[in-house]
Image (cartoon, rainbow, N blue to C red; front, top):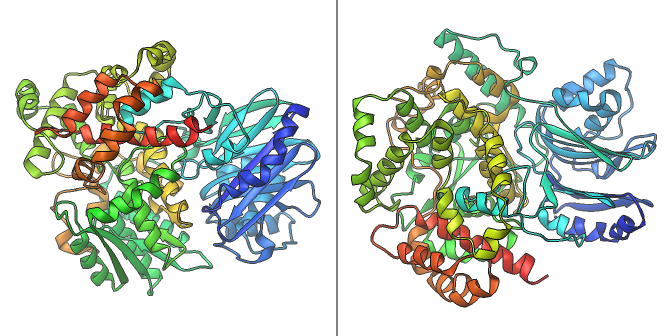
Length: 637
């Protein structure tokens, strides 16, 4: 796990940017605290920050060159099957190796197979290979977007980096993308391939690009829905499916235990992280586990379940207990690290968990991806109920006017249930794509648009936005299935929210996080299964719950799913009240900035402090994050 950056100058104008390669590399220092190195020639620069995990010796430092000095690689990620690939290389006549790293294996495999090597890789990655002879870049991103890759391409240069802060050191133009901003105000994140700036893009998961002769070509190499990538014949027997699922998940966990540094596991007390921890403990008896809890907010605290699992599997368990003051103490560090607006508030928890875990381990396993893979969210249960609607669902839908009048909040059981009932009733009256879009976000399109100032409204291209949204929702037909929803989650929510959050917050603390549920062999298998193996009217994530029922403590079952949330409402109302009212969302600042409409902002602030805040805290947090980012990266430039 590392930070990478690079530049390919096409002319003398582009060449002036080469001087920034060292600064661009240094900007990624938290991603790779163990080593920094750069390479540059007349028109190319490559930078690497290293977090040493496999082969911690100097021989594995990057940029790494092959023996002929023709090819160089900068690589962020891990290839878990690199030992198998090394044997393949030996069988094909490659007998000389100068390191014990997966980086060298990847480089030599690419030299032989070019882009065809990507489908052989089991792991997560973002990398660039420079062919000095052909004067070309090859850039690739892993199947599901576990590792980020941003880039800029214009007439003068091609620039790439693991994070926006690295791209910005090259002195690029900063023009806001209002389609991205409008989307962000609804979802609280910006989906690939867009970023907050018009000229910077994200390489989509499962894609690679080539830069040669001042031209860029982008191609897709992986899709869950492509038959060649799914080698599993359909299984219609549930018992057989459970056995196969267990085998594939355990194999995935085993692969992700390879490290030359201390390795542990996140343990929330939920089914996903508990299964991963249990399987890891089978093969690593001295496993350390880590969880986070809230002393002030017992509604959100699940540490008792985490301790139960830790005792069950006899792990060395550490609990990091937090108060609301602990959250507030970290907020400035988190906001400062965000180099693009990103407002999933649970990032605060992940940041603190990663920071504390890093004191004990360099690598941590997690349960990320299981909800999107196996239909684990409340949203998935709501879609199931909509698809199989009966009298109960029709009644809830018909009561929409009543739910709208009731006080709603995430901060208590009853008020949260009323909030969920209103969202469900609203969604059932929409078309399938509109329903997904509404349930994926915190604000309606019209609500987000009202936040724009007149100037922003004039800068907003509605047709461009509609095309972007249509592409994001293209896998949802008129009558959706659960599989359609999960595929869309894998393309939208997983890479742009969940995996982005984990990558940013773990890498801010130099911690590598590995997600066994995102092994491509497991993913392809699960997507070949019928929907009823994953969800029905009684249970979500059915196959994992049934497969490991005898493996886990019985108390983990039949309890409500709470998620990895942060008690944001109370925090915004109290600890950040002055920041909201007198600084970031003050009338003076809003009017001077002229991006947002102050009357609409004022309504949001009033609702935040009202008796029925609903989901308003998420919308206010999105504005706080944006304003902090704008002050740091745009207003001061």
